[in-house]
Image (cartoon, rainbow, N blue to C red; front, top):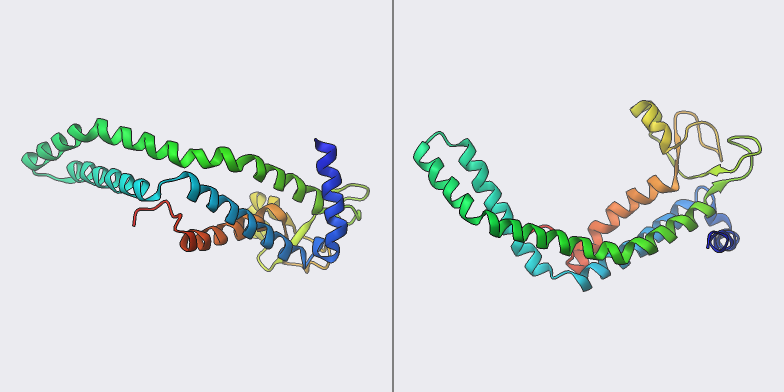
Length: 205
């Protein structure tokens, strides 16, 4: 299986040509995020009853707000009354929370394998085998140049975002982001767009 994925990645890398390298690699990852986000949201739309999910979440939120109000109030009579209402609905709310969790989890079972395959293939496409980073080594390559250097902003944690020294023309003070981080940025934005277009937002209306 691994050899097949490697062969697919090599073939796609050749087919993509300049779109496998900075700066055009950013467009490739963006397109992938658009397609994957669309697929995920379509699966969600098929498997989730959003009207019911939103109603359930609204009821859970209302119950949680009543619980918070009971803990905030200084009027003992009001507090006892609210706590009684909270207690009466606790079992029902627990059932709703379980149903929400089940509905939210089901699409993950369908989408997790395709997503892992996409990442495995992208990992084979976007790597640096020029020896620019580490002589003689193949390491993940940058797909977009960020004017923000996260290693400066976040310290050691930011080093994992990408390369921070001249590579593929990355200027000093900038950082070349790896495909993983650029993908998640694009995916976050595309998910918001697809959720609005397809009506697949998990939040209560």
